[in-house]
Length: 417
Ligand code: EPZ
Image (tube, rainbow, N blue to C red; front, side, top):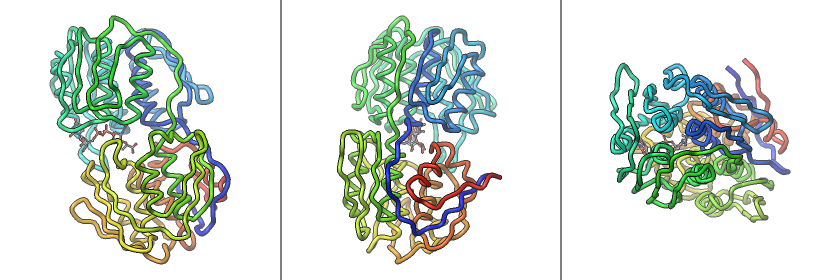
């Protein structure tokens, strides 16, 4: 397993270009199942999770070819409706083929994703919504067995806004017979990106980005060329890197329109942000001010930025409180940060961070995607050398992280296993 060696204490400078969004690209790739025509998808990041989703679609019979950031994908014929456990267990987002498979072939045989490091990650809301649309769903030996002659529109209410649940139903409803109304839908910008490409393919979707989405089913969807949005979490991650090292950098192609909560907390913590078109001019403050954060659904502070911000706050001048409201076990980075001399106490899904003078390099272990990013951020500011094990977690969601950081002046290198 690869690891990172990072020598802390270096300021960053220069420009970094943000890649396409993993969480926009994953449902958009799955949407290729909905048509027998070719999708040409641009700005697709080179990530392990993206490769997994492409391999899954190839298993289903789709043709896919990726050439420097552009993915040519065509599901002319679906040869199999099975998403096997071997693939699904490596990436929960595989559940995103459930809705499209049901819509396209009337049958889907998708392994239950199972939990992951940050929580149980149920999919009951996905299944309940598909049943309302006329699907017959059973669980058999760890697989979801879903069948439906023809999905029909329905009135769906999500107990809690679910991002991939909303995306699954958007794709199932696009060609369903009749009108589907999704209430308490998730409002993340990645959902708007998916709705945009579906509408470009011929769908009739209104209200994406709000809590009520209306989908009038259409007969057929066609192929299209589309460029996915950039990654707001990657942009936020580099903002944290600049803040913790008190650096001055320029972030190119940040989806600033989707980053209000991140920019707001960054400023509250003493950072300076200037928007220049699609670029953000970032300056870390002289000191890091303590802030209180409560993660919530969009447009609130994203749970996917919680771990990265906790690393920054571990060096704040004062006490910060971070409440995680989305997932039940998303503080695994805290134990590793405390091994680097941070002073953080977690109870009842809340972290109390007493800022310390310095973090001290150590050998630490990545546990999940955003936790690994938080350890990189801490290592950039720590005294001495930090070794981060199990970097495969990071490779799932960050494209060329070490190259981008090294180009900004960080002393970072990957040791291949
Ligand atoms: C998406 O996961 C993202 N993944 C996650 O990003 C992100 O953390 C999460 O949304 C929240 O923003 C992708 O988009 C591929 P949810 P998802 O369904 O859709 C509960 C990353 O780091 N829930 O919005 O799985 C659930 O337990 C990843 O890139 C149910 O109870 O999250 C959670 O408490 C990590 N039943 C809450 O809803 C359901 O059927 C939100 O989960 C579905 C969800």
